[in-house]
Length: 257
Image 1: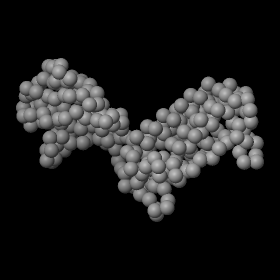
Image 2: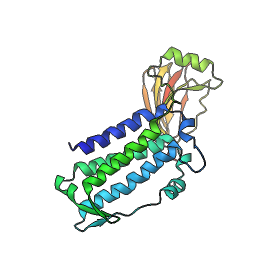
Image 3: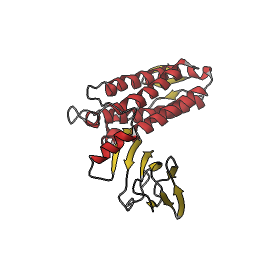
Image 4: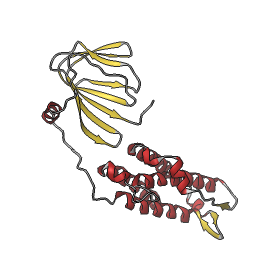
């Protein structure tokens, strides 16, 4: 494997593994109104990935001297409203774009990395541009991931812990884990399941009790350890369930209004 591709893959992994351990307050904090927050820096990396994916592919397929065009960084960050976009959506987009860059570079013959491009009055190569892109990415990742305001993720959640947490919660459900686009809740409806269709895909894993589950007009008989999949927007609810009924609820993916 080209070492540049490996380096880029490691940076993608580093972003996904570490950013969700930084508090939302720290990610959204702006040092002053003119400076980017960590979320906006991540948005800038998304813009960089979009433009450079286009640059890399166009350089590869053209036989002419490619002239690099700049883009207005601040305007793009503002127009895309990265500051008010959920962090997990930004991470998914950044990860997807950079994964596609890896695919493109992996399928590019080595000889093409010496193709010429013009930046200002200088002539460089595709290889130089890829190296410069990775250095730029790493520079901003260091800015994003350097934080003293971190949170500790629970890597092991017992049923007993979830029940105790729910007991101290005024609602019928309690959130026990959140990591990126993954959210896990413990849910124990009281006599009636009042759920409405959700904007994200979800999985139920029955923790205790028995009952029935209706999804899009189809009824299922359920018992402990059964797994149920519900796509975003689907009508669903639990009915005729026992008093000890409870379930784990796993949300994932981006919202689909």
